Image (cartoon, rainbow, N blue to C red; front, side):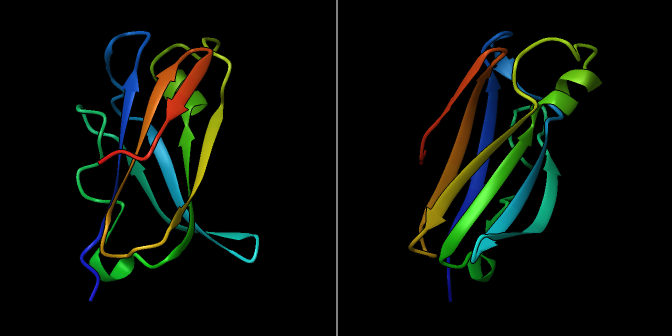
Length: 117
């Protein structure tokens, strides 16, 4: 039985605050085909209220999180601010018992990510 989990955290460096209410989609990618597993919104801390996947649902393989930054900016009254619309981050899960944390550090004209802890 797997004990791992997948989490995320989005920070907006333009405001110096968490990206509250940012929509994101989690997909599993097999043989080049992406299947939507779930849709989420970040909370006031820029995180999701629960892991995106946990325990037996976290399987080895390829996943992608698509952060809908354009929709988030539009919902916050700034549809013309920034360069990115959707930011896809594709990554591999090798150990289903591990914690995979995929943070997004966001600014209007750039972003960064890494495997966090």
